[in-house]
Image (spheres, rainbow, N blue to C red):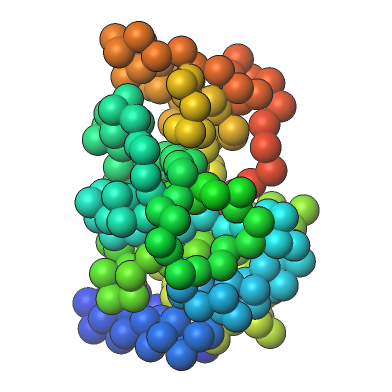
Length: 233
């Protein structure tokens, strides 16, 4: 089912339908401020596994989690460094995904996370409206693994139609570039993927704090495979 968000009424109906589908354990496709994302209840293991299967990826590539408020980060992650919080304050809501140590008490199964969780707060009204109703969602870019992320709902439907209950259509993805992914679990800020937040923007926050920026994404080198929708999504 594809639902438009052109009018306020349509938007409200689409958000409600997507939220109800998530609560049933179904998959949904939602817009984000980067690309379209495929989403599942982060605390429903069968739904997360269905998300991975829809994309054609294994448990070794767990999806990140989208949240509706920065304060939720501490419910999901632990030992977030102060410089990591500075990045969150600067770029959330927005296209920055942070990889943190996950709270050990969490009752979920995102895959082989090695004790970490990737978290982002998207800057998109529709995505945030869904997240406010559902709570944290496991979200990856709406595409088959190895294929470019969907920039509109038609592309997402073409790749994922048989596995998704609700497609929320908000037109062309506003960002069209995936989020930048940084690892906060060490003493340095390690870039896993350079995306919409640039190296220069990261350095502007980190250098006054005396924090080094490292990783494969720095200076335009090769980066990790997409991790959300990044998303997401």
